Length: 291
Image (cartoon, rainbow, N blue to C red; front, side, top):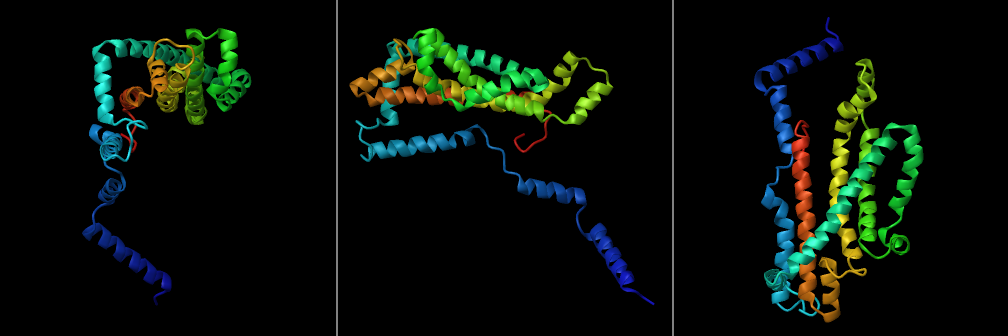
């Protein structure tokens, strides 16, 4: 006498025989499915397609008369102006002055943010001492700190580099601290079982575990660096890309202003590309969609 359970079991056996004989294996199904779900990897030109399309639309709007040269110069005009400034040597001097401010502030801010993240993420005293202060700085924009910074540090290079470093420090700290706090507790237990010292734990567990968050913060930091520089170079400067743009505003030279904007854009995009390449090489062991 057959029961409903017997019929169900027969159907399951028949289905299993059909899967084993006629259908692809589970491994092939998972691989095929994963390939169809994942986006294809973009090359270098694929990442540049968006900016190139924007420049093309901008140029067409300028050539057709939709954009007046008094309001916004065409990219082709800006490129010719930039080449002439580069030929007479003035652009190189201003670029070097801006690069010095930016990279000194960036390097200082990265070191400070990384150190604070490690201290705050790995000790209770450090978190109580620094986390709240950094969160307050995160909520206060750089522009709001300029009056106090001028009173404390003057209007020279120290003020500009300090504000750039403080702006860069925040994304480094936030993302590295979050990555440290997100390390799987099983790795900590394994390090304790293996008898690792505090320094060995930081070097072999904490730092590698915080690398993904650090690189995310670094990508934000390099763009924040140039964003802060745009504002700060318009305060009592006699050299720098921001100074050139500020002077061009007084004379209505939109082509020179666009040259400065393009330089900032290229520097930001180039810095982000370098950080991506470094991240890809440092985290090559990970198997993720981006890899």
